[in-house]
Length: 220
Image (cartoon, rainbow, N blue to C red):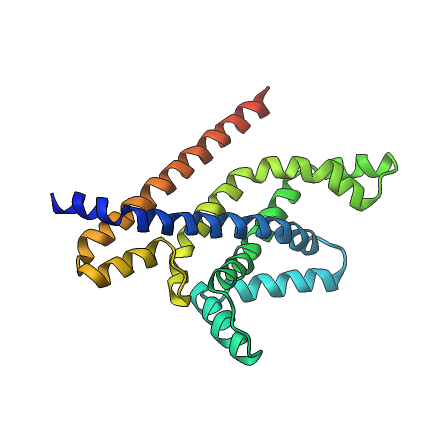
């Protein structure tokens, strides 16, 4: 069948695009976790300034489309500063900025889900607020948050397809380039969709498995 021949001919290019997709998603999520922890702590801070910073950032980022954020960074800021961004760097920054807002909410919810008595007990033992948060609260919160973090990774992976607007040759863009050569849009988009579906299904199954393991661990 033609579609199998098309898959065979285009698979190296698609696999390269998938590799870039996964690379961008992984790096962006790692950075988003780091910044998300900071912003999540800001959002539950007793300081009104820190809380306002977190709230403003989250509202702005979550209230604007990812595509607009990518265009604003790559073309808008690039033109204003007279800087030519590397597309992959711009893509990572865009996804990091976007995912950080969602990760901050995940961390805020996870931290607040830990019994407040844990913090009080740690403080009564002489630990500072930051040390109690780092040594006692966050380890418990992370365990609660792992399924949500994995789900955010799936969302971020799908969001990479939007980065075609700034000329990143990820999976969707690789498919578009092949279509420009052979005009087989139906078959190619079906192949691209299947590749996304397989990767995301595997990640979803892994997320559910980890969630079950964590759930069984909590019952012991």
